[in-house]
Structure formats: structure tokens, C-alpha cells
Image (cartoon, rainbow, N blue to C red):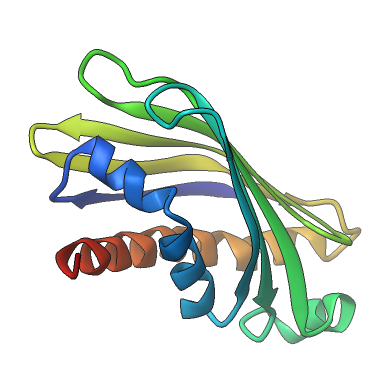
Length: 165
């Protein structure tokens, strides 16, 4: 299933990236959706190329009943973001992967923070796939809109986070 989501924040890319890599914010977002942040690591200096790895426990109550029968009440989700150094304009790009422990569901995407003056366009393009026979397409189809919606929720919460700092 194709994954496409985009939103704009009224902050520069350095500020947006700072929020997206802030452990307090990542924990807040995990808890906001009913999960918990198990670990967050940032390898490298965020001023250049770096890798962020977040491991979360997420509830499955929004998944279709047929999927919950296979996965249980919670999932362990690992998200890895390989960020490139900023370009001359300050835009950033990350290769993103998301895996779910014990479930053949994979997300591969490119997330971009595109500098547009004092604003940043947050863009996510990728795919959601599952190799479960007969059910894989339905599970991927159910996950895709949730992931797209999550980007918009993340942007709204990032805006609130910054306004309250």
C-alpha cells in the first residue's frame, strides 16, 4: 500500500528536527496514542548525518479484529531513521523503516523536512507491506491510513510542543 502524507509547520527545519529527535517529545507522542517509549537512541550529531532508533510498545485496539487475534493487545514497534546532513537550504531527508516484532508488517519510507523560508514542509512517501498469506493486504491497508494520520497528529503536537516552550 502506498503511503503519502504531507503537512507544514511554521518553524525552520532545525527547530522541527529538534522536536522530532527530543526524547521528551517522542515519549509524549508514544503516550498520546496510548503506547509507551521503551528506548530512544540518536547516533551521531543531529547537525549532520545521524541515525535515530525508537522502540515503542503500541496498543492494537485500532487494528481490525482479525489482526488483533494474531498480534495480541500490544505490539513492539521499532522505527529507524537514517538522516542525511542538511543541504544548503537546510532541508533534510531520512530513510525510514518501521518493523513490528513478531508480525510481518514493514514500512519503508522517505521523510523530508523541506525548508520554505521560515516554514518546514514535512513530507512522508513510502510503502506499507505485510507478507501474511491472505490477510497481508488487509493488514497493510488498515495500517497505511493510521501511519499517514500519525504524521498529521505528530505535526499538530509538535506545534503545541513548541508553542508551550
